[in-house]
Length: 173
Image (cartoon, rainbow, N blue to C red):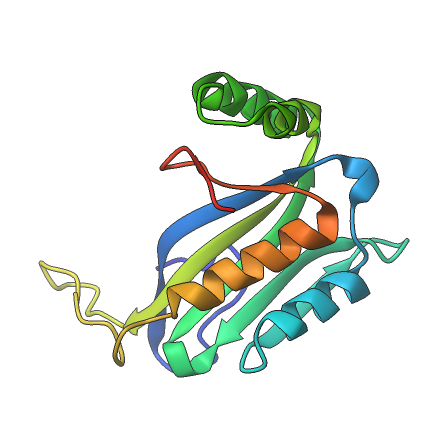
C-alpha cells in the first residue's frame, strides 16, 4: 500500500489497511492544543504510543499517529476546518435530523471543524504480483473496539464535539 499519511511500517514489511473513520464535529474556536490532545489520548489508553505529533505555530493540534502495537493497529487523527467540513456537517444534519436530539442537531449545524479519526489494521505485506491480497491479520483480534471508542470519546470531551460514524450515520455517544 502507498503511504499517503507518512507513517510507514518502520521496516517491518507490513502494510496498513484502512478499516473505518470516525469524525468529531465541533466549532473551530474550540480547537485544542497539541498538549491537550496528547493528554486526552494518554488518559484514554496507557498502551497507546503517540508518534508524528504536529501542531501549528500557535501550538494548536494538527495531527498525530497513535500506535497500538499490541493490537497491530494504528489510529491517524487529523484536524480540519472550513467550508468542506461545514458542508459535510450540513449534509449529515439533514440525514440524521430524525435521530438527533435538538441540541445535537444545532451543534452539528454550528460545526466548522472536525477531528478525523482513521483506524488502520497492520496486515502482513503481500507479494505485489499475487492475485489475491493476504487476508490474515497479524495477530489476534485487532484493536480493541473499546480502545478506539475511548479515544473518540476523549476527543469529543476535549472539544465539546459530537462524535459521528459517517458511514453508519450514527452518533457514537
